[in-house]
Length: 272
Image 1 (cartoon, rainbow, N blue to C red):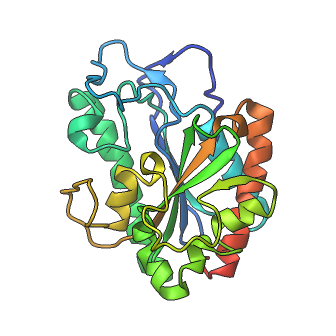
Image 2: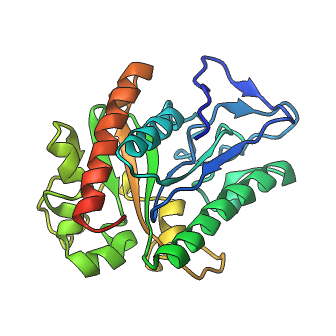
């Protein structure tokens, strides 16, 4: 696993000798991603046009570190997951939006394609190698509910395969990811045992973005994806609260909690 300390007060700048998309192979059909944790900027590249009130250009602070620490915790439990993260600050490239909204110019298009091609490659590899629909946890950060972890699955649509296989308990039961977090004392949203038919169950802002739709192949959403696909994953956008990532030590501690929840959830529903 590559671990890089990228949490800085100031933006870091482009170095032609380094990679800006980092990833690792695992030994089970589970993948963790972090598209918004990057701190690296570019002197000679146009930033994204900020035209919508919802356009965010700052990073989801400490989500790279959260991914690193969660992957490391799981590895200590003998669970080696796939992972992909972007090192670029989303002022220049937002990996969780369609291409037209993600970047300006070919320089950023190169990294956008590399990130998504890598995730696609891993989904194809996991599907073929393990003969299962992979599970993807897309890690993000939010400042709306500071001590709360929020689930985003397009109200269950992006985990359709596993919900059909295991029932709604996969998302709303005691051994769901949120159930395993709550059992460790974490505030969660939505609450457990609320039927997926209670639409809308998930908060609109956090119900899942472009990556959730792209990799789960959900069709009936307000996000249009035109890239052709073959294999799909079940995808959960995991929105962690700011106070769960407020500094390095807190992030490391929360990663152990999240890692334990992923481990318990994965064992309960035969994801590994």
